Structure formats: structure tokens, C-alpha cells
Amino acid sequence: MINEDTICAIATAQGGAIGIVRVSGPQAISITDRIFTPAGRPIPLVQREPYTITFGHIYNDAGENIDDVLVSLFRAPHSYTGEDCTEISCHGSPYILQQVMQLLITHGCRSAHPGEYTQRAFLNGKMDLSQAEAVADLIASTSAASHRLAMNQMRGGFSHELGHLRDQLLHLTSLIELELDFSDHEELEFANRTELQVLSAKIEQLISHLVQTFALGNAIKNGIPVAIIGETNAGKSTLLNALVGEERAIVSDIHGTTRDVIEDTINIDGILFRFIDTAGIRETHDAIERLGIERTFQKIDQAEIVLWLMVPTDDSDRLYELASSILPRCAHKQLIIIYNKIDQADTCPSHFFHPSLPPHTLHLSLSAKYGIHLDELRQMLIETSHLPNVSSNDVIITNVRHFEALTNALKAIQQVQQGLTTGLSGDLISQDLRECLFYLGSIVGEVTTDEVLGNIFRNFCIGK
Ligand SMILES: Nc1nc2c(ncn2[C@@H]2O[C@H](COP(=O)(O)OP(=O)(O)OP(=O)(O)O)[C@@H](O)[C@H]2O)c(=O)[nH]1
Ligand SMILES: [Mg+2]
Image (cartoon, rainbow, N blue to C red; front, top):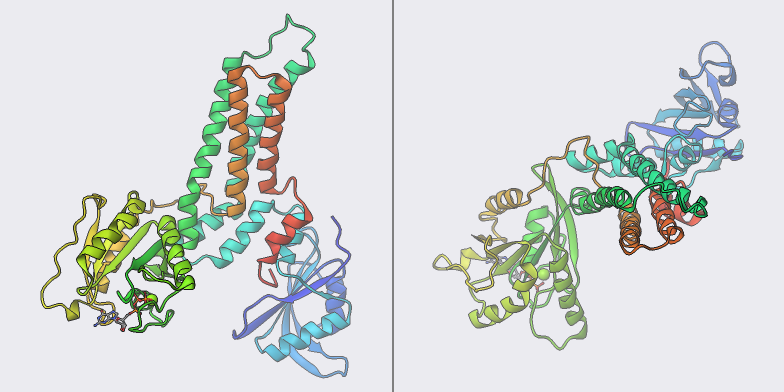
């Protein structure tokens, strides 16, 4: 893949002491030469050794010195993108960086699209698609676990696992297709069906295991979803704000203040939690509030931990009734019942009881507003989050695109298994196998479309 364009972008965030402008493409070095004058011997960059750093000055077209900079030099194919590249380290002033960008563009560069460097690295075969995606995850990682997963994926751990799967699938396909090629020779038997069944069951197990890791991967990458629910005015938004340490949600003593879902993530002791403040549940004729309450129930379904807030003024009959719609949804979740506003309670509230309470339900009294017993809540969250320690060798799916592809691959291999059991003809089984291979191939980018690539790289930052 040859890119005609030479691209440039500011690769660093605003506000730092140093700012880096990245240039990549066939003319990266010669265009940099046009705006850069080395401080020492007047040897242009094109004649210099790659993988060196040269100190010098950037002059604008009027001969004015814009900055004193360091230029790092990389030559194709041994660079991040696989193309000729330079990186100009300037002082971090937004003015300087813009001037350098402007000069590069005047001299023939084009401003890079988000993720275009990594996209070029993929198109030039420096990494496969799942590794390219891991680059974005690595930049966005907010905890030790998400960092470890992204690092492993970027280094090819997942690609290796997929390659292994693919080899087994190809083996199975070849056994079945060989049989097809020689189907006129009835006396020949290539592989008995039981053998094929064992092989496909093994593949199904591997894919199914990968699919199952997604719940964990998602929790690590996006935070363990914790829904904060309860009646209106229970103090749900106050609790969200207290946990995340800022005024994320509006708090007021008007019932029905929160109408939509408000989410924020926070790292507690190395574990990422995604707190979801929801609309308070009550009977209402307000159509919008009702939609909000519907969402509350959806969020309970999506959560792993549910914090149900109750306050001393709650009507116990109503709570009991509410429990019959909430508890069936919490059967496989960690439910923590929180008795809020203990600063207003004369006595310690007695534990709420209902026959359908999940057996591991926890209870805690606190005050969200005055920060009483919040540390106990944090401790409870950490203890109930049950995140296994992930090591850097674990292959865990964190990406929705991969999850979808693997789910489709799983369906295809299950069709294969069914076909083998019911004695379906070889050519139909082989079609399902090809489909399974297609989905696995789509993860690493063996088969891909511009649309898919566009969707992936659009979410990258500029300069990566
Ligand atoms: N005394 C006391 N008041 C509290 C406490 N927590 C919240 N409040 C008050 O209770 C009122 C309602 O708080 P919110 O956080 O808006 O309640 P909510 O559950 O989000 O309410 P909706 O969004 O309407 O469902 C506000 O006036 C808060 O200041 C607490 O621990 N003690
Ligand atoms: Mg609220």
C-alpha cells in the first residue's frame, strides 16, 4: 500500500512544555528539510542517518525563527507507519505548533485525519487491525488492568490466539473439502464424522471462551457498571456526586429531578467503576419522566452491582411493592441496600426484608450529603467486584467489534456442529466453516471494508 500524501499532525495534548509535530509519508523528510535548518553542519535531513536526532531551527518563509527544535528521523519501512517519518519536538506553545503545522502544509503536507498514522501502520502491514485498535485502548487506559489488556493485544496476544484458531478451522475445512473433491470415489474415507465433531467441538469451546471473556473485558475497560436506584429524592444524585467527587448531577429536593441517566467512571483502589445515576422510580403521568424510569430498569439489567437507596421517610408498603419489580432483575447481581440520610434518622434503620432478596444482599447506612460511611461503601464495592487478577498473558475481549465478530463466528461453528450431527452434506458444512473463518478474519482486518476502517479510526485522536 503506497500513500501519495505526506501527512502532518500535532501529536501531543495542549498545555505541555514540549509539543511534537509528526510528519509521515514519501516526502516527510524532504518537506521537513524545507522548514528546518540544522544548527551544526549544514547537512540536510535527507542525507542524514535515520534513527538520529538533529538539533536546529524552524524558520518561516519570511526568515523569522519560529522555534529551536529537535527532529527525529525514521526511514521506511522501520517506522511506526512503515513510511518515512519525522517528529519535530518543539516548545509546547500552541502558537509555535500551529506555525510549524502551517509551514509544513504550505510546503506540501496535508493535515492528518484522526488515527491516520495507525491506519497507515495497519495498511503497511506493521500491525493487524486488532493490534491497531489496541493502540487507541492503550492511550485511553485508566487502570492497571485495562493497560495490561491493551498492551497484550497491541503486542499481538489476541492475534496469536486467533491465528491458532484459524489454523484449526482451516484444518477442519480442508478435511471436509478434500472429501468433497473426491466425492466420486466412494471407497475413499478421509476423516470420520466423529473425528470432525471432536475437532469442531474444540473450536467451538475456544470461541465460546473468548466470547465469555467480554463481560470481564468490558468491565475492565469501561468500568464495572454500578446502578444507583431508588425512589425520587432518596439522594441518588447526591451519592453519585459524592463518589465521583464533583457536581455531575443536579441535586434538589424536588421529586423527579433526574430524568435521564447520568454516568461517570472513577478508579477506586485500581478498579474502575462506572456509576450510573438514574431517574427515581415513582408513579407519574409525566411522559418524559416515565421514559426516564424505563431507562432506570434497563440500567438495572445492565449493571453488575445495584445500589438501592432507601430513606427513613420512604413508605414501607410502597417499598415492598417496588421490590417485586426490582428484585427479579437483581437475582444474579450484587445488591447493596443503602439507608441514606442517617443524619436525619433518630435510630439505626432496620434492614429491609423481602422474600426475594438475593442471598448475598448487603446493607449499609450512610449519609451521601455529609459523607458519613462513604469509605465503607467504597470498601464494599471493592470487595464485591470479584475482578480476577488479569495477567499480561490473558486474552480477554474488550472491543465490541471483536465481540460481535466472535459471536457470529460462534453461531457459524455451531451450525457446523449441527450439520455434522445431522449428516448435512459436506458442501453446506464447508460454507458455514468459510463463514466462521470470515468473521475471525474480520477481527484482524484480513477482510475489511473502507467503511469498517473509517469507523475504527474515526475514534482515534489526531496525531496517532
Ligand atoms: N439530610 C440529608 N439530605 C440529603 C442526603 N442525601 C441527599 N439529601 C438531600 O435530598 C434531596 C434529594 O437529593 P437528590 O440527590 O437530588 O435525590 P435523587 O434521589 O437524585 O432524586 P431524583 O433525581 O428526584 O430521583 C436533596 O435536597 C439533597 O440535598 C443526606 O445524606 N442527608
Ligand atoms: Mg437525582
